[in-house]
Length: 296
Image 1 (cartoon, rainbow, N blue to C red):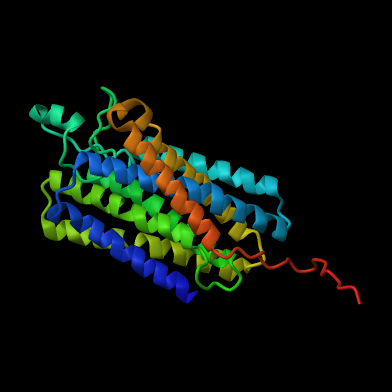
Image 2: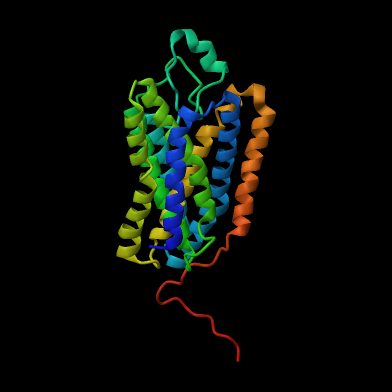
C-alpha cells in the first residue's frame, strides 16, 4: 500500500477521533456550524466536479471502458448515497430536543453538528444513534474507497496525489463523528462508551481504503477499470452529500444567505486551488495500447 495513503488514513482517523470529542470540550454555535458546513460542502462539490469526475474520465479512456461507463457509475454513486440517506437519515443529523426547547432547536445555538438543529417537517425522522452510525459507516467506508482510488490514479502514488479527496474527507469526518457522539449523549450513554464507538467509527476510512487496495488493485491491477469506476462512483457520492448540505439552505437559512454563500464560494475556491496544486498525470496505458513513435 502507498505510504501516502497510509499517512492520509492516519490523519483522517485523528480528525474523526477529535471530532467525536469536540462536543464535550467546545461550545459550538448554530451560525458557526452553518458556515462550516457550507464551506465543507463547497469543497466537496468542487472536488467531485474538478477532481474525481475528470480523473474518472481519464481512467475510463485509458482502460478502454469508455466515458459513458464512467458517467453511469457517477449516477450509481449518487443514487446509492441518496437511498442511504433516505432510509438511514444519517446525514440530516436531527438531534431530538425537549418540547420546551423547540424554539431554540429551530433558531438558537448550542448543537454541535451540521443540520442537526433543523426540524424541516412534521414528519422528521426519529433518529437513533445506532441507525445513524450504520449509515455513516457505509458512507465512510465508501469514502475510504474514494481516497484510495484518488491516490492510485496517480501512477507514482506520491504527494500530492489525491490531496483534494483527502482534504474533503479530513474536513468532513469530524462532523460525522460529532453526530454520533451527540446522539449517544442524548441517549444517556457514558463518555467511555461514546469514546469507544467513536474510536471504532474512525477506523472506517482505513478499512474502506484497505478493501479497495486488496479487492480492486491486488485482484485486477492498476491498468483495469476499477480505479476509474471507483472515482466515478465517488464523484456521484460526493455530489449527493454536498447537495444534501447545500440545498436546504435555500429554504431554511434566509437570515444568513450572504455568509453562507461566501462560505460556499470559499470552499469551491479551495477545491480549485487543490486541483491546480495536484499534479494530474495520465494513468498507465492499457496493455497493447499503441505507443507514439518519435520522428527520427
